[in-house]
Image (tube, rainbow, N blue to C red; front, side, top):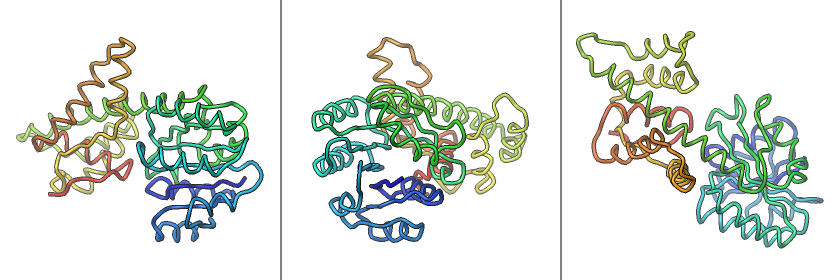
Length: 299
């Protein structure tokens, strides 16, 4: 199938690579010329403007938007929406707030344009292992794009979850859970690190726990990798950003009167990380860098 792809950052470019590897026709746009050149190396056709990208599509046009949430997504969706026609499809694969997604979907529906929200997890490893996709919007649009979803995801790795906004809602809660999991590992490894008289090897311990332990996980595998590369995480500060989804999850829990103390506290711990340098926060910063290529603050 033919897809216009907007946004060639850490995840977007690898998604284009994976689509091209499965012989999909991709027209790729990014404001960065070097990123467009990299997309061309994978077999994509590049476009230097959104107008050019849309002009190179035909039939029922499909445009996947993979840019940061907020104003950039808002402006991109509005621009692309003005360029498309009835029955065309826009997919927002970024981490948009689900309420914004519902609003955008309603506005595009008035123009006869389909709007899918595809919550996407997989980080910088998605090219190799595939992306977990949580998709909301009109069912007929989902079916039209399903061959692309099938390529991007591992086996059983994509799901149509419901109406507009539901994909981003599920991804928001997914990321809220991630916050709590990261915090749990951080606290455990900080306790281990604090017991100096045992001279514990955190790389070996994380490797051990991945061998049949009930706490084994992909995140723990990434911890093993991080400790192998920097056993004491001396090269980074314990400064941990939050990119929005954790806050939205906590806000939604409050709106729905759902108790979520662990996720809430993990969010507040990230705020604390910006005031002091703790080993536990170094663990979270290192893991986020390992799975998502998120930037770290170097010492």
